[in-house]
Length: 290
Ligand code: UTP
Image 1 (tube, rainbow, N blue to C red):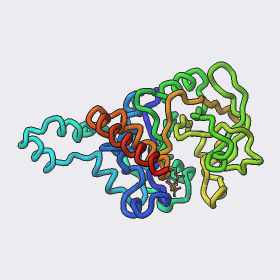
Image 2: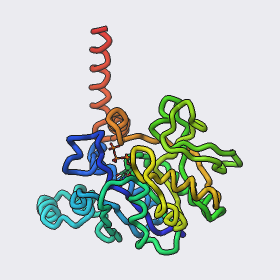
Image 3: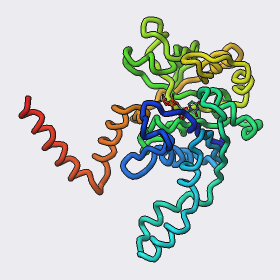
Image 4: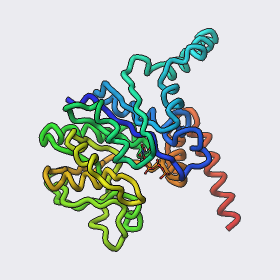
């Protein structure tokens, strides 16, 4: 059973500056819920009991978000706003820990910070800016493969050729519902990309990965890249890939974030019909300008 999840939130989030100057990208809201809360809820659904956040200098915002907000809770109680109360106090009994990544040296370095917390067990990594439709659980499907293989499992998605330079890209052989990974490259040039299968922000890793992360030199962008450590690991142990079936939203960049907001707003029972009306008017105005 996998019981621990690592949530790296120490990146600089430069694509969202200045919004991310004093608050992590992972606190960006999708309507009324921050990205990081979706990630925690996704992990809870597969039985995760312990959460480790790898934080940067914005530790406070994440910690406060999952902490008890005594004064606010009292005010909501006194005002009889029990629905809102339920929304803010559902994390009180969970086991959260925080480790600070001293410098944002890359995702690989962030994962290495989790070594003392992990001991001898497999664990999940969730990058919360890859938001996956909450109706669907890719983690559940990855865990099934892990239970059979007892090896590293990574989530994959087919992307268009012009996007390959933004992702870790793999090549592999498809067997049943998974891939046996044969190669991994971080952010390749489109001309040299081994495929258009991108690594998405869900991983099941084993403690083996730390050995490779410890030895790793900076890679693409001068960062310690998790993909590079996986590539080293692959020389000694198998890695399996699973193509996600649900919709994934790239909320870590501006256009992707906007698309995510629109899709979630259209599904939100409280605002969807008014929002749809707004969109229709906006579109018809735009068409008349054309
Ligand atoms: P990204 O590659 O999206 O980088 O990180 P970023 O710094 O967050 O954002 P940009 O590219 O500057 O806009 C992927 C995940 O890895 C975490 C991020 O918080 C995000 O969840 N990360 C990245 C760290 O925890 N530490 C790092 O040093 C780098």
